[in-house]
Length: 474
Image (cartoon, rainbow, N blue to C red; front, side, top):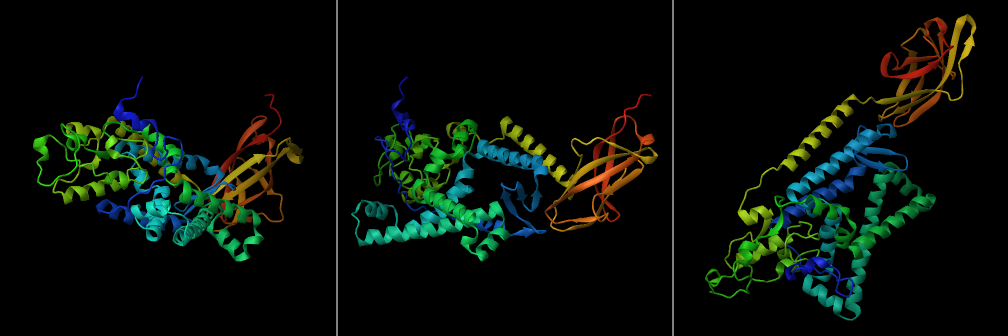
């Protein structure tokens, strides 16, 4: 089946030539109402991204994703391996939230919130404009031979890119290993922790490669969210859209001529100035319709509005709108699919909130020592040996910790010199204990016992364990 002539643009991506080579994108510097809003949002998110590893709440890092030690902090809440189910629910909430936004507003996450877009468009691209100039100057600089001017500008740009990539790599490492540890490594000197230094160099190289060369290809080729967009979008989704009804009219586009009655001639409002194409950071023509490469950055909206204003035509030829809105002028409505996502999101948020409130500050895990049977002592006493592991999820030491048998009359003895101990902050304590119960209180060879964990006289956690005894032949 042949592709219609007006759909041939979908056969390839805008950043690759017909010969299969890289088509470098030189976008025009954007300006306008939406760009001002994006700058405010972007710089706020940049501050959040750069400061989050260094902000602490109750002694916990605000955001941390220590994969190696399986320790995570999300908004100051610490998550240990024992809390993995809570972490999974948190990630599901994030995924469904993004899916809901995509169904409702297209790829707005990519254009306004994604760190890749923010760093590329609001940091690296702006440095490029500052050093090399706008679109026309960049194209001329790229084509001219390597002279002193080109070497100076390209060299300065790449050095600054490398420095910023190094800073981003350090912040990224702070998310992974913790800001306190990163600062300590810096104080100790880079060669005192070679493995961390190598990781830092690798991260710097990756960020430098992404922002200096790979650039918009991340959004077009590498990012799975771009592919997900095609599955989630429908005719009711609000996206950055070209109003083809108004722009094309009966006879299509036409270059602007002063004092010409375009409506009488049957031409649309699009004057084919190509400014929406020149300003696009992914090099697409928004007039071709919704495309995989579009990240909803609104640069084309600002540029088109400026052109429309300069020729005294109504703004909004390119705007936030759904396909249904452009075709039938139908207003935005919450669809059943959106309601479904909202319902699932509400349930998961409620579930996570309830679990966080019910979660204890200490996690107790007491298990019978593998391979050990019970011991029959004097006075009909049955003894079992257990191992315990206590995880302190708080930023404070839990002192005077002891165990008490809650379900049966008996004795509980720690294999230690003291009957109480301390569980360090954000750490664990483990050891061995004996539980001794009179055989008359047991009901068979396997019994459930309940053990309480106390801090002084305060019960802070309880758990159950299996207690073995002699088989009953009653």
